[in-house]
Length: 224
Image (tube, rainbow, N blue to C red; front, top):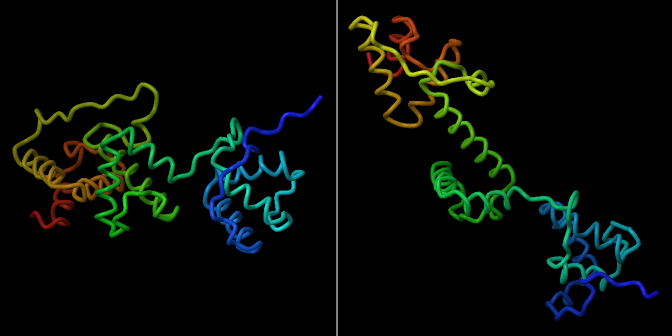
């Protein structure tokens, strides 16, 4: 019986790739594999199906390389082949979460990154740093003011308890309130308190700190 050819082997309209020589095509395919995990898997499937399993682009002729670049968008990969680049993740997150989209915009502005909102125009390191920064900010917000450390907060059954200031003397209550107001003044201020609390091994609740520790922190921030 006649073997059925892959669906992507139907004629494809010319794409203008004919002007590229063999070395340029090889470089293009290699660069795509380095920057796009999905393309890497598409190339692997293409070479297995039509190139005898030889994955080195330099060992294929011009027409073979041109054809891959023309039809790679139609090569479907599933299971182990289906992978998502970090840029794709950012695009999807921005589509699904308006908050993430805004956080990505604010991060770029604050860090002096490229003004483009297209993740593919940013390096992998830049995207990784942005993701780590936003994750840390989210974790800080989720654990701020609770009775647990960040690690404890995610243990099964962990509960966030409200700060109890009912039994504090007026002097300590004043210090506690100053710290709380300081945290409300901005994200950097919240991070400063979070770092101080973590360094002292306590919760994020100012009421659980000694007077001298609160005074130390406020003095560091120029509030005493």
